[in-house]
Amino acid sequence: MSKKNDNAASIAPVLERIASALERLAPPRPPEIKLNAASAFVWQSDSASLIPITKVNRVEMRLLKAIDRNLNILLENTLSFAHGFSANNALLWGARGMGKSSLIKAVHHHICKQTGKELKLIEIHREDINTLPALMVVLRRHPQSRFVVFCDDLSFDAADTSYKSLKAVLEGGIEGRPENVIFYATSNRRHLMPRDMMENERSTAINPSEAVEEKVSLSDRFGLWIGFHNCSQNEYLEMVAAYAAHYGIEIAADSLRAEAIEWSATRGARSGRVAWQYILDLAGRRNIKIV
Image (cartoon, rainbow, N blue to C red; front, side, top):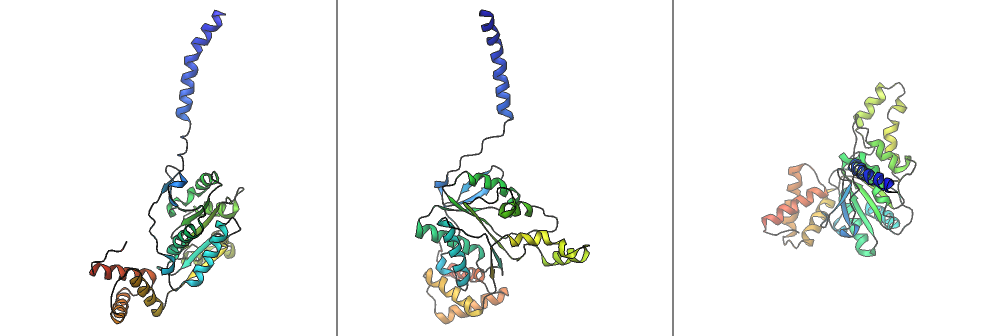
């Protein structure tokens, strides 16, 4: 009996060293996700963690002008998802500076404020799209919450294969998209790839119709295509006036109109972004701090 005890005593240190070595070799445990820390997060792929954003850079939904139809479509889709019903992934594409990303953030805030639903906004950076499956694994562990995963300015070039990760998550994989996750993306390109690249692949391929089918089919996986177009001068001035009124900037209507038109002319464009940049300049000249 004592011999057995001696053998066990001699083996114990060896087993402890083996256990310690296995612990060092094992991958680190994923960090704990504290979803109650905020309503919006940024996905950090290096650490497979969600960084809470306590103050989101956003615009009030009522200040988004000239995109009423787009607003209603996205709001209805997101409300359906927030209440646990069917909803589509959405691709917001088109003219620069017309409020694509602002609309997503505004709709999310409006729903959280008005309904009190546990709806979280998760931003994933374009360069981290290939880690989207890993993010889905994290979000799948929290079925009690619903998540809008959002990628701004999404596009792919000829050598980029990370779009395959997005395709698998949207519809193509065995698991597919978790039912508590929806994906929204903004892009200046309807098919998420440059037109000249599509035309070049068609002209050089043996079968032109199949040459770009794989990449073009990515945009087909978005159930909603919401197009944004350049605004008219009247719509641009409406945006400027709404911002000025909201932030209490007192200026004669004629002066506001003349300055805003001159501002857009110097930039060669009219958009919501240009209107906002003018308001920032106007407020700065009048020593008004916009929060």
